[in-house]
Structures are given as C-alpha cells and as structure tokens.
Length: 307
Ligand SMILES: NC(=O)c1ccc[n+]([C@@H]2O[C@H](COP(=O)([O-])OP(=O)(O)OC[C@H]3O[C@@H](n4cnc5c(N)ncnc54)[C@H](O)[C@@H]3O)[C@@H](O)[C@H]2O)c1
Image (cartoon, rainbow, N blue to C red; front, side, top):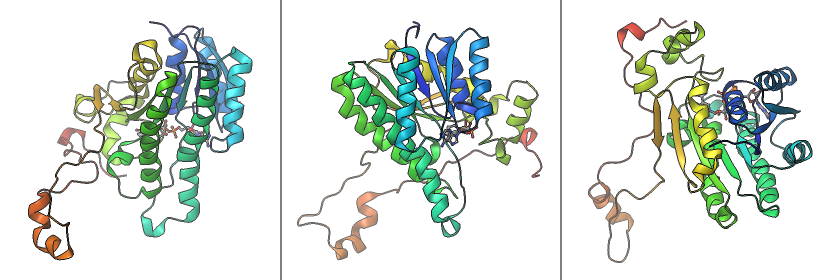
C-alpha cells in the first residue's frame, strides 16, 4: 500500500529521527515538507530525498509559534495542493535537575515540544477538517514522558503532555476520520549518542556494523531507520482504525503502551479520612507503582569505560 498522492509535514526533519521519517514517507510515495531551524541540514534533507527520486521542499523556521505552523501548512498546500500527514518531531533538550532548572530551560523545551505540537496540530487539523481529508496526526513522545527521568523535568512535562493531547485529539477528530497517535521512539541519534550506557551500540552504528542484539532486542534500541517504518504505517490507509494510541518502537521491538488506569481500588463507607488513611493506606492499595526506566545491567563485553 503506497502513500502516493499524499502530502506530509515532518517537523525537525533536518537530521536524526525526523530525517529518517521524511525519507521513509517519501520512499513510500508521499511528497514531504521538511522543516528545521538549521538551514543547511534542511537543504541536505531535501537533496537526499530528491536524489532518491522523492519530492520534498524545505521550510526553515522554528516550530513553536503559530506563524510557523501556518507557514508549514501553507507550504504543503501551495507546493503540493493538500496536506494528509503531520509528524510533530522537532525537539531540543535542556537537561538538569529541578533545583538547577531555569525558567528559560523550562520554557524552551515546553515551547518547542508541547507548544510546537499544539500549534502545528491545530493548524493541520483545522485544514484537514475544512477539506474533509481523513488525515494522520503522528506526535512524538518519549519513555521519559511515560515514566519520568532524572534531570528531565521540562522534557517529561512536554512529552507526557503530548500523549495527553493525543488522547484528546483522537476523541475530537474521530468524526472527521482523522487519526491521532503518539510514537514513543528510542534510537541512536545526536540526542542519545552521549549516554554512556548506549556507547557500545553507538560505536557499532558509527562503524556501519549491526548493533549488538542486547541493544536491538532486549532494550529496543536501534537506528533511526528502525523507527521510520511505524511512522509510514500510521500515515497509511491501512492504519485508519488506529487512533489514540501510544506505540513504542526501537531496534527489533514494537510495544503498545497502556493508558493510565486505576490498578487498585478500595472503598471506605463515608469516605477516606486522615485517620483511615494513616491506618489503612498500605493495605488498601498494596504494592505502589515504580518510576523511571529500569535498564538491565550491561553484559560485560558491552561495557565501555566512562569517558
Ligand atoms: N533519540 C531518541 O532515542 C529519542 C527518544 C525519545 C524521543 N525522541 C524524540 O524524537 C524527536 C527527534 O529526536 P532526535 O533524537 O532525532 O533529535 P536530534 O537532536 O537529532 O534532531 C532534532 C531536530 O530538530 C531540530 N529542531 C530543534 N528545535 C527546532 C524547532 N524549534 N523547530 C524546528 N526544528 C527544530 C534540530 O535542529 C534537529 O535537526 C524529538 O522530539 C525527541 O524528543 C528521541
């Protein structure tokens, strides 16, 4: 099933995962609006798609403000006549612990990821509804948004918020036949290359070798291309009934994340008073939930000295 005749926007697609998404959508037949803040990478991305026989145009502008969202949709319509697919992928990190995080660290990450997703999806969905296009909204989350991560207050807020918005949009856009899903990727990119735990995998990738099966299979950590197939699938007619989902992908692994549900329920006639909770909380709810990603210990042969 081809994406021929469809038009896609991929934000932050000059490099990394976004570039892989844009290239795969083009490979499957879609015309692509590439977007990045970096002019040179955006131009290279367009050239790489065109030299592979695909169609692409670049918009160099920062995702976040409404003006950029309007420019992206307008460019899709002016250049290719329509818009079917939006992938909100642009992202930045400003990692530090809560007590060192500045207002600027917080606002920058929220501005690009959360506000950028909101403004672009609002613009795209408005266009799709007005033109009766059964569009595809694909927003990028993160394991950090699902489970929390040390040093990532701003990023966790943005990524959890994105998944919350996706569930809401799946409800609001259902009648128009527009799907909205979140993809939770993990891959070797500039964003993850410096994490010591992944060093052996990044090293293999840089040498053009296959990543060790421990990373690809057990951790679901692979290349950007490993994530791209899911983006194109969700963009296709075959995924018309897939909406409101958070889908994890990386290396050899595909996962469906649960939606938050109560896992324990207890009742106290007349309500739960302070005294009832002091005496009854532990028995009422049982084992509490864990937070953060739990990585298994690295096998010895994959350990690298800290640089
Ligand atoms: N790499 C991973 O394992 C991983 C895991 C979970 C989530 N993600 C998410 O995937 C997305 C892409 O990550 P990546 O690892 O490819 O990162 P990356 O840093 O390699 O690429 C991000 C791209 O976005 C561009 N960009 C930054 N701010 C922008 C803005 N305001 N407007 C337009 N473009 C902008 C950058 O110039 C860059 O080209 C991000 O949303 C990230 O949070 C990545």
